[in-house]
Each structure stands twice: as C-alpha cells, then as structure tokens.
Image (cartoon, rainbow, N blue to C red; front, side, top):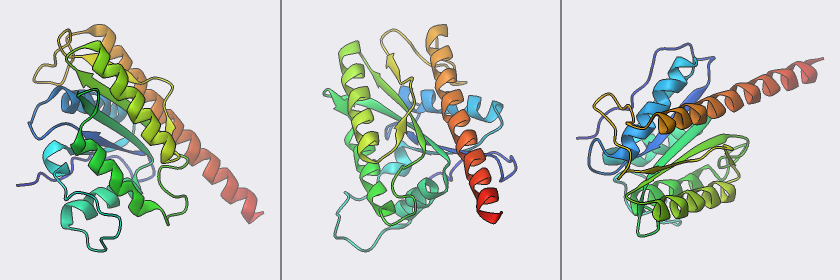
Length: 209
C-alpha cells in the first residue's frame, strides 16, 4: 500500500521543497538522509513533501506511452508544484539506482511546462553507498542528470559512506559533519527557492507598472 505524501502545515506562500529518494526497503540511509534534510527545511520555514522508495515503484518510463498510473501522476504533480527539490539515491554498481533514475525519467512529462523540466529550480543531491568510490560516482551522475534537466544543483552535494555513518530512528546521522552538510544543503535549496520567489514577485510588479 502506498503511503501518502508527507507535508507540513505552513502557509502556501512559503516555498515547497520536494524530496525524492530511498529504496524499496523502508528506513534506508538515503531515505533517512532525505528526511533529515526536509526536517531542516521545515525548521527554516519551508513546506515539504516526500516520495520515498515504495512510492517510486513506477512502471518503466516509456516516452511514447500516453497513459500514466496514479503513482506517476502523483510524482509529476508534486514535481510541478515544487519550488525546490532534493534527490537522495543509493549508489548501485557505481551509479544511482534504477528506481531513482526511472523516477527522474518521468520529468520528461514536464517538457511543455513554462518553465520546463527543473529550469530555475535548485536541486540538492545526496549519494549513499558503502564506500567512497560509489558515492562520488553517484553524486557526479546525479549532477549530470540535473544539468540535463536544466536544474541548478546546489553548490554542496552530500556523499555519505554508510560504513562510517549510520542514521538513528529519528533520522539523525551518527556523524556530526554529515549532519551539518545535510543542513547546509537544506538551507541552500530553501534560500534559492525564496530568492526565486522574490525575483518573480519583483518581475510581476515591474510588468504591472
């Protein structure tokens, strides 16, 4: 059974940050790191939604396929509403997981939006793996995908070696350094979303004059 997207109750005029990540196994490091980031985003005044592994068990993306199931509609709708995005993936065999890549393939459904894809939006990136080699390669692959989707990867991307850092039941990392990095990432996504909203308001005022 799919879990509903988690949100907070902040006013709708505040930035909405969407988290996408995890694995089909509940409580994975990538899911817990994502939840830690979103908790800090809420502390900074943002609204949040999350789609984790079980909610991302989507049909394989087919470009020519016109029909979309309920889970795909939920993903695309959440992406469309989001002012900022955070993606957390495990590192499988030197790159991001197929689950996360398939979810990101559905961003193609935003090609006709204005602006399209991830354009003008900050995207925070997290890579988790048992070893540093896979975290670096996965983070680089995620950055390349976000660039292709016209998004702005945040200056800080977080690589987590799960053999050295674990998460507790409250989504707190055992490494204080990783905790600080995740909170910086959250702040960068929220700050960019706030600045973009301010630019849009100023542009609207200028157009009205």
